[in-house]
Length: 410
Image 1 (cartoon, rainbow, N blue to C red):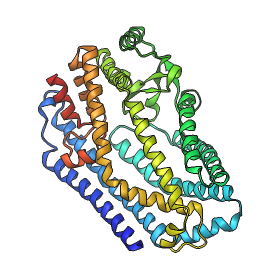
Image 2 (cartoon, rainbow, N blue to C red; image 1 turned 30 degrees about the vertical axis):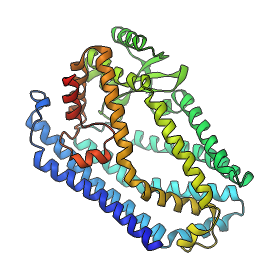
Image 3 (cartoon, rainbow, N blue to C red; image 1 turned 180 degrees about the vertical axis):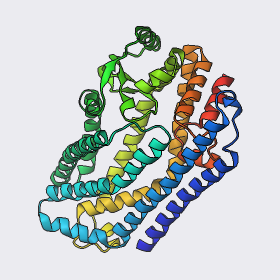
């Protein structure tokens, strides 16, 4: 059985690499061609820079993922998890504490191993193409804050989760699922006030005309927004974005300061109308429902597969432990769910097209939406020539050239 899992894992890894290889070859073949939708809006020099940025990120991704895959093979199939499991169990007899330590130490190891890759990506690749503005001090501060938050949040979730497993051995799957759902909703409420301000500064936008236009747009679509903020994204990166955060009465609109300097008012309103379309079409709610149905099914399967030692026996882990079973089950789940990725992304792209339609209809200005997408693609050096198979498998949004073409056809 172990060899069957190994073969399936290698097949999944090979399929992912094959798709990335196809994408690179497609970009090398067509990357110098200016799409008709971008004619007059992009020159050969910028297109070449876009191609180089995509190629360099892809090749670096090859290296980073290869390192991650190798560690997975060593940890699971090389026997390292047997020693790690034995070490954790030797530290304490407490079911809750051993589970907490098991996952916390793994998260710390993962964070440490990812640091060299993050440093190179941030201070070499992103800096080379004019995106990175972050200083080493801010980067280090972000890492420490992330470490504190991940320890705190993981500590709460894991401690309560393992307590529920111990307290209700026959129905823990339902209780754990319910707790994580409620905790996630609670975090959506407090994140705008507690989590997000730890990393960025949020100030009211200083353009009364734009704020008035945004509020009129939100009133028109029937969405109540508590505040409209500008985020100091430029202290870390020149990438642009805008999003809604929070739910209910704490819902806010966040605009990157980089976005405000690069898009005009009709384009900004088109971007926000698109985000409003996601709310009005209940895409967030639908996504939560789908994910929670799958999470509930996953919790139920986890309950059945962890009742016996079948998972740990496959990897010859003695003594068996509940955390080790969860790790193996998560690994098997990632392999089995790999073919489902294009289905979820297909649904996501359908949601994006619905939001585009909504934005064009509510603003009655499709060209504003098309122009904003063109500017965002240029500013972020987005790949204008993804391979169709790669886009179908990995893209949560339709390729930007396809989006612009479709929007203008409206």
